[in-house]
Length: 178
Image: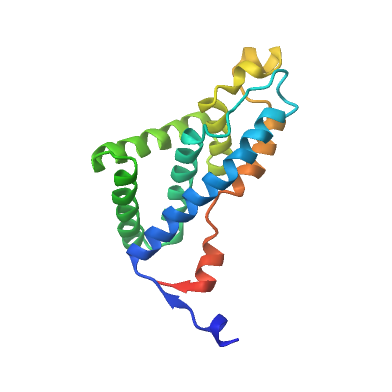
């Protein structure tokens, strides 16, 4: 009982590590199911054949989406410290210079905002980004293919999927303190 009352204190570095490890674990363990759901989605008249191991674009979309929520969770100063640590660690993982990795993240953020315009809903934007990054338009019926727009029913289903890849800060703060 006392274990649930006493919250473990984490440093910014530990928060960054937990955040990165959890995101990679969820993408590594979950993308096979995501690919299956996309490949079997009734919105497509032809199977997109998204491969189980083709999770690179998806992983970046999940990272960028979660970083956008990070800024609204912490005070500005702490969010900046944690975000900088995350950038440093991810740059090493992706074997990029820090500036190049930050540019990559900013490119993904811009892409998500562009395909999501005028909506400001990040989960919806992440779903649209998956649609465009995996070039799913060509597998839709002629109407949506001509419009170069995702079928809204597919987006609704993908929103549910993407919401499972968003970091649960409420659960985190019930267990840890900073």
